[in-house]
Amino acid sequence: MTDSTPLFQPLTLGALTLPNRLVMAPLTRNRALDGNVPGPLTVTYYTQRASAGLIITEASPICPEGHGYPRTPGIHSAEQIAGWRAVTDSVHAAGGRIFMQLWHVGRISHPSLQPGGAAPVAPSALKPAGQVWTGSGLEDYVMPRALARDEFPAIVEAYRQAAINARDAGFDGVEVHGANGYLLDQFLRSSTNLRDDDYGGSLQNRARPLLEVVGAVTSVFGGDRVGVRLSPENRFNDISDADPQTTFTYVAVALRPFNLAYLHVLEGDMTGQPVTTPFDYPALKTAFGGCYMANCGYDRSRALAAVADGQADLIAFGRAFIANPDLPARLKADAPLTEADPKTFYSGEAHGYIDYPTLGAV
Ligand code: 8OZ
Image (cartoon, rainbow, N blue to C red; front, side, top):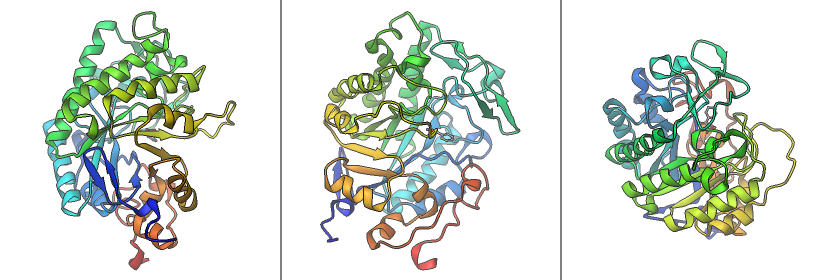
């Protein structure tokens, strides 16, 4: 390998120049303090990973109703904005760049995690299969309340306000979480959207909420500081689509006019169920036409090949960044990687969060 290997070369991404093509994927870590405020451990965690070409934060709820997991840091209160400001200042001082992932879980929640113990909201009253971790135990998902048509403008407004809050907190940009079975994906994919108004039925209607949110967020940051994450095949959170290739090609083309910083695609199915119809990711990349970020179990050799062959412009790493704060240096040196410990993904405070060693310290 030479120094010109594109994976380790800078890339102009919208308004930013990244020093390499290695992105820290959004990773839920459940370490927020009371009030779902990111604390000092979170400052250390992200700062340790500032050598990433770009950090994308863990999914961060835009409003109280957007929460579905305990101790996930939000971006809807003054305390949360101040907590995140400490993160962005520290990452920037360490030479890094950081986007915030904006999140609304929709039906993937539980009354115990909702304001006033209310039912979670969703496009349609369809209960997800499975169970939710409430912080004190596992509970079955409940029947969500179908949103009335006139409630959605307030959700778009919450995304717009969250983008303003993220800007005030010092983020370089934001990523709209349109993936993994959460609210915007629940509208988009056919299995979870049975509406008969202009937010359901046709593909154009199912995509409308996502596109309205992208419109609101780009009005705050400008398209060149906004990314969108999609997961065409992912059945995580009990979701599916009757025709993923058609659905996601439509979305990719509809996103073109926003001149986004990137499209971030989770290329696979987190549930591990057998794939029935293979999805054509290169076709999705072509349909979008802009910067394409690939994610899903990439290792060093696949990442090198994908970027060198033009199949992806950026590669997002999840587990590898959890366990290797200095991942770009390690991959460049072809040094061994530390294995991540799944027992501390969603709990453990400092352990498994900020105590993974850098190369010299292994
Ligand atoms: C795993 C556990 C909890 C949340 C996602 C935000 O899938 C998540 C998530 C993943 O995008």
